[in-house]
Image (cartoon, rainbow, N blue to C red; front, side, top):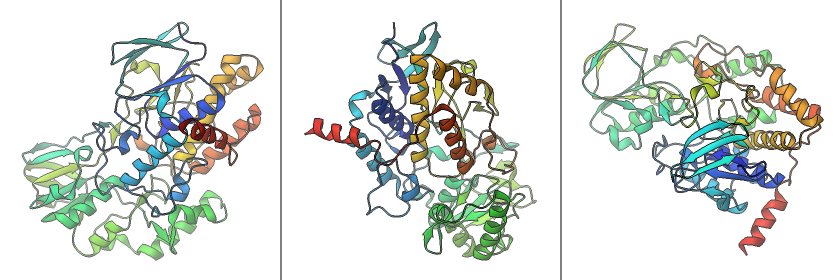
Length: 449
């Protein structure tokens, strides 16, 4: 039998750490199971399957991305490197005494629903029982490879396997995909490959990392909150002034307004395109040996095709029917709560246009308070149950996202935060106040001493 109210958290990455701190703060018993030897999730390149490459940096700035009550070090740059992010997570786990609650080198092999909660089978051979299960295993572990007509006889692999620009030396390289990782890797190829190309299905808006010397997300957060239609117009004009007509660089004209896709925060690629170090190509039409034919009728000989084409979202330890799926994404209330199962939660199974970690804290707090309310029963539990079952808020912020699977459960961060505030008001739950975790940190420091 499960210890009364005990929670199983799967994953010791960014989301799992936020949950651990929130559960400690609210006195909820829990275990975190992490298959790797340390915290950090995908940000630890020694974690098997991590997609982190040497040049990877945060695309949100340090002032907008940190955990609540735990700023990133002042000497960090505006956009920290992957090594700095990993060090920050290690420091976070140590500061709040999270490691004793995490079982490392322990993978959850299967979680099976039972009448009183979950039966969890571990890689150690143990079987444990929990009242609730929170999936925090992350989304960037299962590479999605594209399919094209023809046979390619060169080297073709997913960007998940990429680490260093040295891999491009002496090669003609094609990067497929123009997400933030694809653009970063294309910049590496522009500097190291004999010849570099990037293939994009559509045109995109490129947001510079700094606007008037301020990180772009900090600049946006510091300004007045405009209606989304007006913000799109203002920002669209600003980007045209800053970047000019991108078709001059061989890029397609965007077929959507700014913010209607996940933002590409990168103007370094525009620099390399303007200097001829890399060439933009449209979508791949077919392969023929080492020749890549594109939809505009052009073709190029390439030695290496690197596919920055995203990831399939999977929860491999659960039966697929444990969640309702929408275009390959779990369809959850607030991207957190199963509508069908009151003992099943998820954190990190969403995408948004802002910094994640402080948002994770707010989301983890909602999960923790819901678990506590359900354990106690009564009117508070009834209210949250009714909201989860029936409330379907619009989290788009007035943006008409492009019709891709990536955007099926995408949320606009300001709209999401407003909905969290409404939810807290309706349930009488307090917001996270500055200093709310200081007591926990002080207790951890006393224990360490």
